Amino acid sequence: MAMQIESLDTPAILIDLDIMDRNLSRVADYARLHKLRLRPHTKTHKIPALGARQIALGAAGLTVAKVGEAEVMQRSTPDLLVAYPVIGRSKLDRLMRVDTDITVSLDSAEAAGQLSQAAQSAGRTIGVLAEFDAGLHRVGVPVGQRLHELVRSILELPGLDFRGIAFYPGHLKDAASPVDEMSASVQHALGQVRATGAEARIVSGGSTPLLWRSHEVQGINEIRPGTYIFNDRNTVESNACQWDDCAATILCTVVSTAVDGQMIIDGGSKTFSSDRTSIAPGFGRVTEAPAAVFEKMNEEHGYVNLAGVDRKFSIGDRVHVIPNHVCVAMNLHEQVYGVRNGRVDEVWKVEGRGKLQ
Ligand SMILES: Cc1ncc(COP(=O)(O)O)c(C=O)c1O
Image (spheres, rainbow, N blue to C red):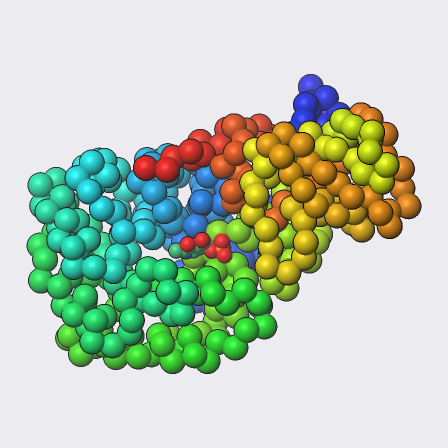
């Protein structure tokens, strides 16, 4: 007999399966409608079964950040994008043993050179996307001469198949952000590629906050949203979804009400992560008391300020908290529970958690 949610111990991440399925289908439909390849970033869920579900719904492949994640996700897809420069012999040797088609996005001739050597030794051809900076100033060369040179260096190297360009618009946190500048960057970048005589078959961008605007960015043909599968408090703040689109909540138990006007829940920074959002205070939204402020954390204690909350909480009560940043919270949990109609229908091991290398 399926387990009831009441019998789960806390803290525990619950995934509302109906909401998750709706999120997955909506984005798959959007990508299909606008003829965008969808290569979801799996850093959010880190669960091979969910990667397989994304592929079954029409995703062209999956994205990872780490070689360790690629090792975990390889059984879910024939196509992996490592959206992170892979530097150093040990990681490259492991990557060459990953048994899928592989594309790496990178931003230096050094990274391309190392990848080329590894590909040659392994007798493989590895796809490459040249990464440019669309404004986040994290990785990615500026569009212009340096992008031109990067593409040329990739084209000259054996074992590499230049497939196109990539960028990540992580600096744009509001769904209503203007996208004209990004379109202009993409057009400029495409001009730089054309000037080498090569063709960018893949133009890869996309994040969850700007997901629904992707078709307005001229020139992109692939999106890599990650958070959309669950959404979180950040996604709501970015106006890219509503509270009832948040599939992941962290079930916690009230363990102390000793201090007036406050309750302590059994999840702190080791359960939620310390990530803040850029707008609202606190570390999550208590679904049962949205006016409460989850204002402070120690490792195992969550301090919830109940000023302005008319409901009373007692020791042993359970609350569902929508985390600020679900991707990091997932990384902290060994397993998560897929729930529907009050029952636990799925127990998934978070196989990609802690795969930092
Ligand atoms: C390179 C890259 N692509 C895609 C994503 C997915 O973005 P989001 O989490 O907004 O869906 C991320 C997220 O960090 C990223 O770093």
